[in-house]
Every structure is written in structure tokens, then in C-alpha cells.
Image 1 (tube, helix red, strand yellow):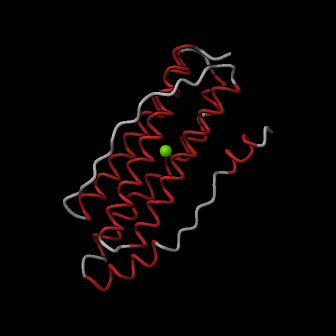
Image 2 (cartoon, rainbow, N blue to C red; image 1 turned 90 degrees about the vertical axis):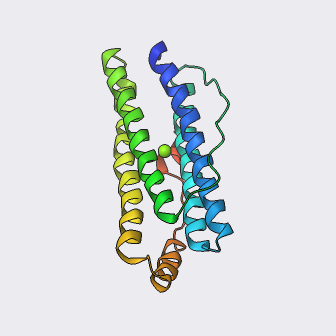
Length: 176
Ligand code: MG
């Protein structure tokens, strides 16, 4: 059983997480076009992470006896004025996602769908991490990497990211 109103919000969230994947892949492509391959790698991994978020919610809807209804995904921007501008957009985007997650928790409580409330605590935690990542990248760039040499080092550091799917998704896909 899943509350109808909550189910609609979860479906919207699947679309929005897929949009996030589009956005970060587009950012990755922008970095690649500037030969900042480490940043490109980080944002490429982030696109997978967002896809994983969508798949977690998709799996949840199905398991809860709902129906996942897939919608079109908006085109992301292709250009940013500067690295600063891109990092600002990254932070703003994650703040928006956090507000959407909070809204799901809020509505699920109002509708007394406490399973969704409980399940979405994972996303509440995840958003702390996502906002932290976005703010750290922006902060480190503003503080250190505005000159060429430091940017080169930061690019190398960003390139060390290794993507691993969230354990929650792996468990869901194994049907556990
Ligand atoms: Mg996400």
C-alpha cells in the first residue's frame, strides 16, 4: 500500500533524480571540453549516483505496490559562464533537491504513510552528504584553485573519485 498523493510525489522525484543525472553528465561534458578530466570524472560518477537515487525510488514504488510512471526529462544547461558559476549551480541544485526530499517526508507524515517517511530518512542523510560535497568543491575552488597550478592539482584530486553504487540499491536489486 502506498498513499496516492505520496506515490505521485515519488514519481516526480524519480524524474527529478534522472534530471540530476542529466545535469551532472552535462557538467562532466563541459569539463571534458575544457580538458579538466578530473572534474569531468567526478561529475560523470555523480551522474551514476543520481541515476542510482532514481532507481532506489523506482524500486521502492514497485515494492510498495505502486506504479512507476516515467515522464520526460528536461534538457540540462550545456554552458556555464565560469567554474564558479557551475559550482554555484551545483550547490543550488542540491539545496533544491533537499527541499523536495523534505517535502516528501512532510507529506508522507501528513498522509500517515509512515513507511515512506522512514524509508526517506536515507535520502535525508544522503542530502547532507550531497550538499557537503557541493559546498566543499565550491569552497576549495574559491579558496585554493583559482590559479592554474592549484586548479591542476584539484583536478587531479577530483579524478581520484571511484564510483560504487549505494549499498541500499544493491540490496534492493538483489531482492533482499
Ligand atoms: Mg540525488
